[in-house]
Length: 154
View 1: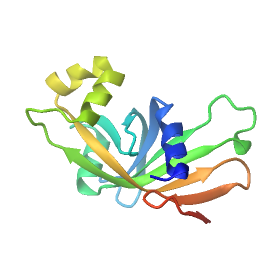
View 2: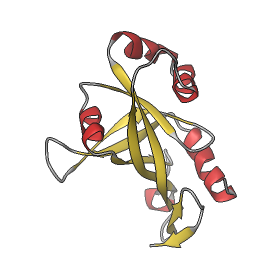
View 3: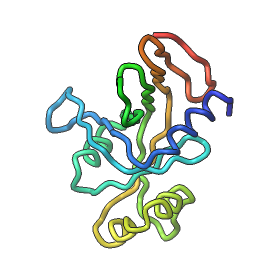
View 4: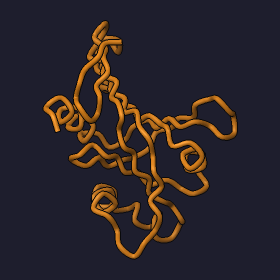
């Protein structure tokens, strides 16, 4: 992993919640977004726990493309702050007898969510980044390839 990608993952890991946007199944062609908790590992893979009844669960099972967005909070001038979007694909993680390290990391970060997984039929999703969209303030925006760390303007 390169330094640029490590820095981005470090920024994501300092947050507890992000805005997840998925492709709506109810309203074809429209995005659906909401605030959700997450865990991100050292490799930049996001893990989150979502109810099987939730819109995101239905949306991600039908179309895995999604984005995950965090931003600097409590800023006086929002246009001059940093914002990060992780753009990638989600995979549903079926329940098995063993829990992966990422699921365990999520449960350690949110111990009260264990009940959701065990009793309320919530399921884990893993999100693999393809690109990061970085905005470091007004006029400072670029894309970063998640695998290579190569930066491109646009």
